[in-house]
Length: 213
Ligand SMILES: Nc1nc2c(ncn2[C@@H]2O[C@H](COP(=O)(O)OP(=O)(O)OP(=O)(O)O)[C@@H](O)[C@H]2O)c(=O)[nH]1
Ligand SMILES: [Mg+2]
Image (cartoon, rainbow, N blue to C red; front, side):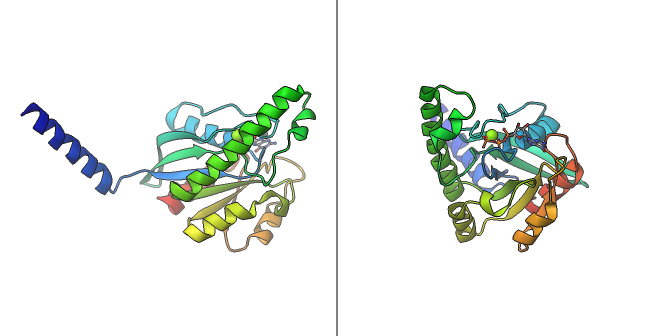
């Protein structure tokens, strides 16, 4: 009887998970290296769960594996949305170890980092194909938007029809231009912010709840 009850309980728990309307959405934070994805993830998880997610760094490809923080509940205007925040490595078309040498790194370390980053990029693409319900695409608003987007990534997002919000990050920098990003991607909604300074986070959370809730 113990065994049968156990099996019945686990089937019923699995069914609950399968049919629950409360299932968290998996929101992937994508974008080029150094755009501020981890800084944003850390801010979101700190604001809503009290923990941080991972190290931030001025060296591109600091994040080389996809990381997930589950059940982050964001409450907005009487509405609540539970999301799994996924921090991904910066997605580029090419990871070159010579870029790392600029950061005063030994060649061995640079080669190791670039190998890991390449695997991380493949992993991030895989998650996007299989597992992601919504995308926050983080761009550095102080840089040219065109050179920051990866066409393969956009292709997967469009073919799966995944909802996308564009985050124009680093608005605290003088060279920042949010309008340049809006002009480049008029079909998508753009939200401006500074993940580092915490500027405009109210609108960020409003949009996340409205768009992915
Ligand atoms: N001025 C400014 N700097 C920022 C902002 N957000 C992030 N940064 C800085 O940009 C650098 C990269 O930040 P990360 O959060 O590590 O960037 P990432 O997109 O996770 O980078 P990878 O993991 O390497 O792909 C760090 O030096 C951050 O402090 C911002 O809003 N304003
Ligand atoms: Mg990162």
